[in-house]
Length: 136
Length: 121
Image (tube, rainbow over all chains, first blue to last red):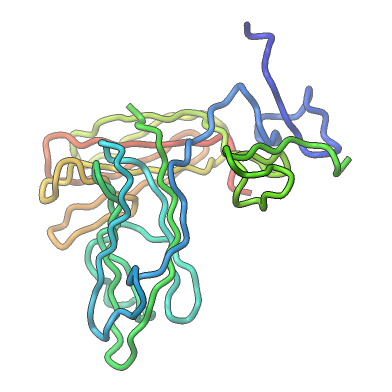
């Protein structure tokens, strides 16, 4: 069985000789399974996060276990940030918009957006990927 | 050559008309290829947990963890994590290992990881 499989390489590269790093796809390696990916705005409905306030967003996945995920959000300047799971605000963040407590549980991917501006309310664009792999 | 390749789309979406975001697979773009993935445990000794990959280059990885003593046991966090109580979790890769530093204040916590063949290039 090990003689059978599929490999795909970019145009101009020999699939029989390309290293695994240079293959677009190979059946020799598993790829992560994406359950959900979406671009959304917080608050979920129209409106903005009020000054010096926060909004928590829950994205329901329904897997029954806590999945791996990736999360990005856009601050008020338009810059996209890769979110970590720090669950308190760092004092030296220059942007008004920040995230705290990005986490998954068996039901939801959840995140809290904070707006530290004392003058301006903002809506926040965010993007996420939830993986289906349980990684047992 | 640019006219050749493979595209796949979910049921109900015409693969010949779908934009890239609607495709399940497009051979024009590489997929992340998993070198190793799984779950391991840390006993929070304060030492660095090493998950050996042996690729010889620094790979792309995704690492999450659950088991922080002050949180729900099933809550899974993305590195880097730190809370006001001093619980923390971070991960970094070198050419041989994924190194995980976790201090969750529990007897044991779970580390979940993907390590990809794909180098950060």
